[in-house]
Every structure is written in structure tokens, then in C-alpha cells.
Length: 390
Image 1 (cartoon, rainbow, N blue to C red):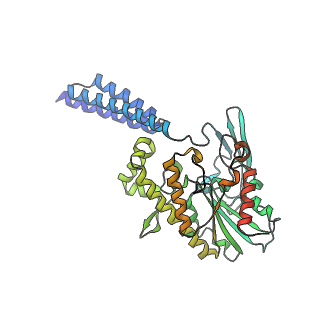
Image 2 (tube, helix red, strand yellow):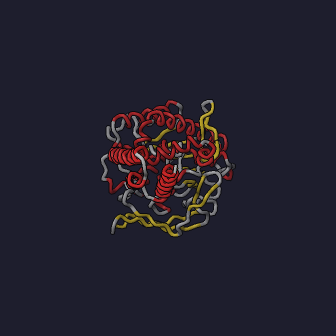
Image 3 (spheres, rainbow, N blue to C red):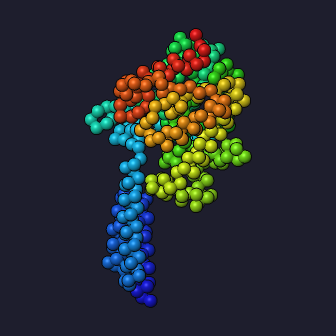
């Protein structure tokens, strides 16, 4: 009995050490390494063959999980921005928001510098207006208005205020139209829809809003189901009878549904676990993204009496194989999602073909992957053409 009690205390201490390590260590590999060490410590410290065998099994499982995670990581495509160090002044330019999760701090000038080793990748200043939108060129008070909603692509990550797509669109119209830029890095269609539903864009009612313009990219699929670390406080939607319904934030849902919360945590910590249910999850994401885009179109018409125009950096039926390093199955799936949006009547504008064959250093920010000012100029001209503007 004394040995049993002693073993329980040791096992509890080792488990507590692993829990603390999981909270503090920077990655899955480190956690697995700690689990191996603690398991081997249990083999030495615990008494009885069953206890020692259990500790050895924990160590062996940690080794297996670590190797599976490493293998899954090697197979996964390399994300943009790896190795890039970005500094903001002020550092707290993003603030919590009860509806959107977070938003740019109103009435703020933000200096951003990104470095890659000793090289400066970009330096820019973001001007956030008192209403939380990013600055665009001035226009006459009665000018036609175009609302741009999006993530870092539309926001213009790494670019000056006058280099964003909305700013260049206004310039191409000789500054006779007003561009309103409602965007933030990391946003997705759930934030676009929630902004309309929560009345964040009602101030534009009565203005001559000619179009609502958004921009979709493949990472939005993972974002609409909250699979990125920064989206915990962001709005979550679920399909109810085919329609997206707001359910609170992702964090609120995970606390109310702890099994789903633990499953989500495991998916984000261990790529090989996420891969097990990838196909079903992708279908869920595609259905939710499609429903959110249709809801966004309806809200644009209902709230502002304006059409929705969807720009896309996304493979379609004309895209050559290997888009963005994707394999055949992944690309075919993305093509099917876009085809579904087109079949439902969304007005889509392809951006990919405008930059085919161009030097990547001319159309993207170095070591970052976001569009350059030059690329945004091409995209703004294409949007002008699509809208039949002079």
C-alpha cells in the first residue's frame, strides 16, 4: 500500500510537470521531448513492473507522436513569412472588439518594420482613422463610395496608405470616388458578415455606395472554422438549415463544448491528428465559407443597396497545376469551392492571371508573400474595368 501511494504521488508530479511544460514550451516537439524524459524518469523512480511499464509506454508514445508530428510538418507546405520578424510601434495597435474579436486601434499611426536576418523586407506607416478604417484618399462629400472589406491582402500589409488596392482604385478614378477600407490582418468572411450584422457599417447608409468589394484567399477556409491561433475571440458561425448563424466567439463555444475544444486543441498542436479528419473538415469549411459569402452578398444589398464584388487569389478552372505549391487533390478541391461560388451567382474577379509569369520580387513583398504596390495597381485597374468605370 505504501508503494502504491508513493507511485501515485510520483505519477501526479510527473503529470503536473508535463502539463506545465505543455503550457510553457514553444512547440509540439519540445513537449514530446519533455514527455520522453518524464516517462524515463518514471521508469527509474516508480516501483513495480506495471508502473514502470506504463511509464515506458508513455515515453514510447511520446517518441511516436513526435516523429509523426515531424513527418506531418515536413509534408505540410511552407507558410509565407517564416523567418520574418515584424515590429510594430505602437505594439498594441490591435485592440479587443466584442463583435469582431479584434480590430485596429482607432485614431492611430502605426509604424511597421519587417526584417529577414539583416535585411529589411519592408517599412511602412499605417494610418487608422477615428472610425477604425484605414486611411484612403480624400474625395468630394457627395462622391460615389466603394466599401472594401478584407484581411491583410485588402488592408495592404507592409504597404503605405497610398499603396493599398482601395487607395489606388481611388487614384485611378482621379480621386472622384471615395474608398472606405474596413479590414485587418487575419480577418475572414465571418468578420465581414459580423461587421454588417452588428451595425458596424450602418454609418454608410445614405451614402452612394456603388459596390462592396472583398478579397478571398484559400487560408480563409481554415479561418471560418477558427483553426488559427489568433481567432479565439473572433465570431463563430454554424450552419442551421443551410444558413450561417452567429453562435458567439470560438472560445465561448469551446468552453461550452469541452470535447470539441479538446479536439480543436489537438488538431492545432499535432498536424498528424488534424490530417486524420482533413477531408470531412474541408467539406465543412467549404460549406460554411460558401454560406458566409452568400450572406455577405445579401447584407450588402440589404444594408447598402450595393452589389458584392469578390476578388480572388485562388485557383480556378484555368489555373495551371501547382498553384501555390499545392498538390493535385488540394488544388482540385479549391477549384470546386470557387466553382460553387460562381454557380450561386457571386460576381467573381480573377487576380491570378494578371501576374502570371512575372518576377515574384515585383509582385510580392520580399520574404512575406503579400501583394506589392505594383500588383495592387494591376488589381485596381482590373476592378475598374470590371465595374465598367471610365
